[in-house]
Image (cartoon, rainbow, N blue to C red; front, side, top):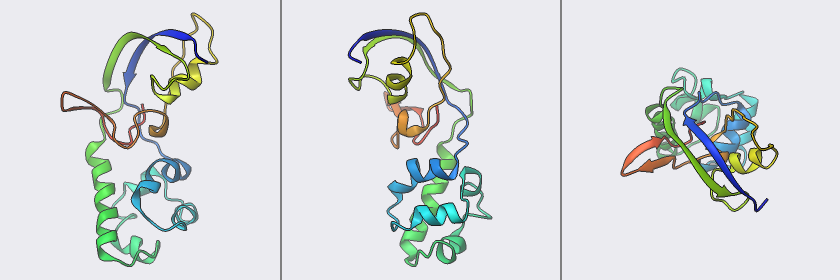
Length: 155
């Protein structure tokens, strides 16, 4: 911690293969549902595949299964899922390739780098797959108005 490290890095989008726990940690807290929602997502086993399936995760399920009663909240949740689908980029899409130096543990890189590089030896290579809460989060990464990493992306 606190050491300067230099990294040769290729950043690419990974498949968003979310488990129920991934959804509960990354996406669900931003949706403004009741504290019971994570338990309901576990009980109904709502993983990324089910979340993105409009036949399974739809207005009727949100009302009956999750107990969301307000039409506006139901519509917001449906829209949030649709936005996820629209912003998903093809797995393997490279968004960055460079060499950079940063200080470990100082928030100068994504959290996945801080955690992984702190345990690596000089010259060691690794492939990291990072959930959005250890990478670019709910906002993603933009440069000059262009979306490089979509919101909630796994990289």
